[in-house]
Length: 257
Ligand SMILES: Nc1ncnc2c1ncn2[C@@H]1O[C@H](COP(=O)(O)OP(=O)(O)OP(=O)(O)O)[C@@H](O)[C@H]1O
Image 1 (cartoon, rainbow, N blue to C red):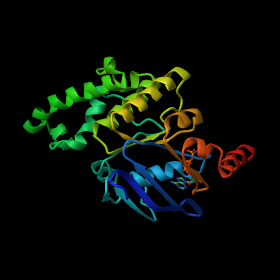
Image 2: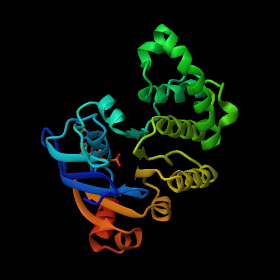
Image 3: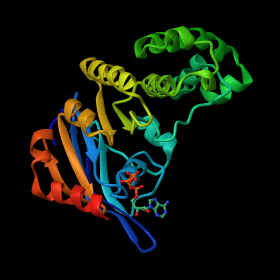
Image 4: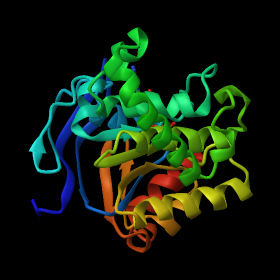
């Protein structure tokens, strides 16, 4: 494992009853890369995300983040280890403001924590101001600073997705896992999203991305892993993967089914 490896997963498997959703899936992500995870519907992409982020307990696999072994057995432990994620179906606190949603992410890294926030301890109040300032900075960074005090539910769909990214960044993660960030976005929103992901990468972050928009994946990613029926069938640069016969067959097969 190179010292620049952020995430290394070897042999991840997960079975649901009769469905082998993941079968011996591995991935290596280097510092500063954007890595895409693609594949036809039902290929196992979301299951892989859920496994590495502690939502599903894997049947097997070894997991290292930033050179340290981690057990993806609980979501909060994974967040503490340094993976932040967004969801295919946006999961914000709709009645909280945009800034408050980002602050929730930040509490992973503070001492007083969520309980402190609820009890409003003196330690929490001292931290609160700094956290609030940081939240607003992150909202500016993702381009929605002017909505900091708006309730999350009043933001447009594209802005809610950007808010989720700001919340993920607030945990200061080693790896950001984005689950279909462009889903439901119009063409203009996609251009803005692409610029944002590019900027996040340029600022030294490492990103794993599930995305159906092939143009976005091919334009953004350094490496791409392709899953089909829970198995990795190809790995390489976007150009290599695109001309791989197994990949072409998997996608054509999926179209004719
Ligand atoms: N909680 C679950 N219980 C039972 N089966 C599941 C569960 N989650 C996923 N599966 C099954 O595992 C397989 C992989 O599903 P998964 O959602 O990971 O695929 P995907 O590549 O993310 O698909 P999509 O692109 O449609 O989101 C599918 O056959 C799915 O039905």
